[in-house]
Image (cartoon, rainbow, N blue to C red):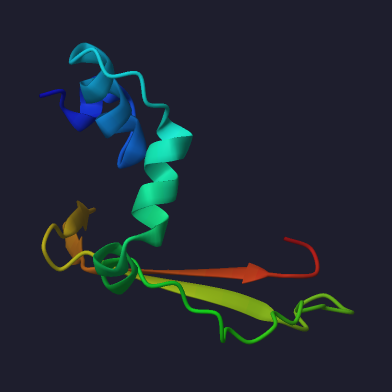
Length: 97
């Protein structure tokens, strides 16, 4: 059996490579169609159709709208100048970036 890394992908591509090695000439599109129509796969890989529409965020002036991201480094704290840092806060001004 071919590993995912050797096949260069997941799902249908892995099965396609394995079938080619076994002498069966079924393409990945046919395999993907079978996977997509399988009831068990639908429960495992359910797609959500009721997502709300995305509304773009616009900024009209400098420092009008900020976007923030907090990164947690508790498992691997960073040491700088004798101090230990466990969190990094990144703020970006959406107007000037």
